[in-house]
Length: 282
Image 1 (cartoon, rainbow, N blue to C red):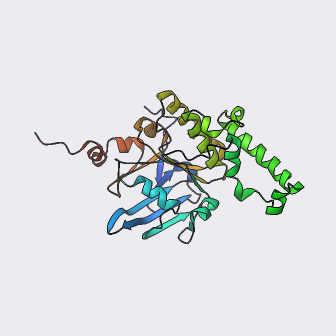
Image 2 (image 1 turned 90 degrees about the vertical axis):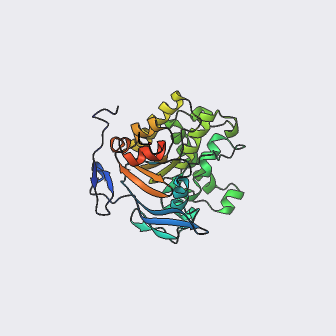
Image 3 (image 1 turned 135 degrees about the vertical axis):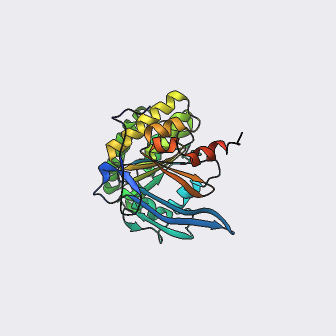
């Protein structure tokens, strides 16, 4: 059970969404309004509405095939929506590319880990800092002073981020040589290196044992508290979701069937039916 200290009160905002009470008075970091996408006549996501507060840890759950990863792909512009609006910090993302959305403040991890396995741990993190480095091509090729100055800054930043997960001693190791749990952490560190205001985690606990999952839970809280950013996660581990998420959105067949606190979601008949099936009458 979540302690009283951990409980978060959700309050309405003008867009009809709900966000943590502490975020009231601040513009929501994300607003999805009637968002949808159709593939060849099939409506993969329809009328998706979601509001996330600036420091909220939110969950997006639902049965397999419900459309959760499709939503992530819409938010990061891997797919272009065929309907609706996405507002990132009040700014419409319609004309943005994936790179532009990332630069604007959305970073993500993937269900299947995507690291540069032959690069070092540190170089994986520094690769994500491309938007923040200011040296030009010639300074990089000829290793001019401007290059070394920026490299020094990048090294310091990479070590600070790795230190958040106690991974600084692994900076020189090849990413592909790391244990599975460490690779998961590295992917999150790399996403943080882009300085996001919204971090999307796609099944971050997949393949983890209970001890690793508990550590992940604490790390997610640490990320939110340290960087004061919002986090939206897709996850099938209901223990993690119910203990860490403040607001939860439930998808089924591409449509939102419930939104609310963990306590509200756990007792929602539509959610129970989506996961367990409709109970036959005696």
